[in-house]
Image 1 (cartoon, rainbow, N blue to C red):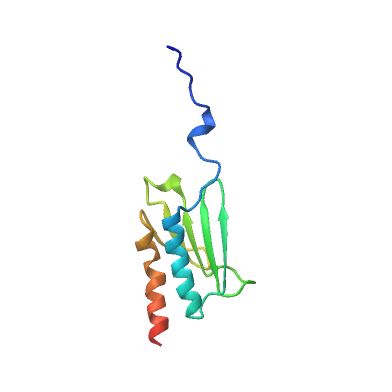
Image 2: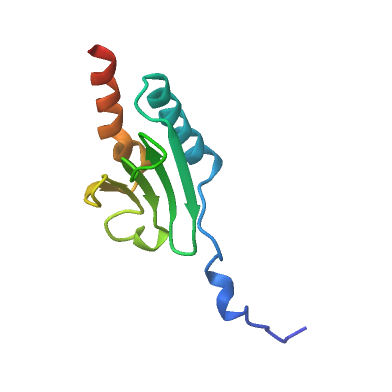
Length: 114
């Protein structure tokens, strides 16, 4: 009873980073509104060891217009969420998903007004 067994070294880090239900719901809600506005047509998700990425495309054969990345390793630094533009520039970074998605949502409002 007095023996302490340590956890394996790889148990602290998960094998795959993913989106939880609330995060994915928020992202897919934005995606659905952009599809309804006629701006986006396709998406892709990559759930890797270091990051989870949601990419939105205007057309399936192009580079993604936006990538939404979740990198838990950056949680204590500049924030685990990043919005990355078509050419790879980081447009917004933060600790919460809502403010990171704000530039895309503002663009959606402009599309509806036109």
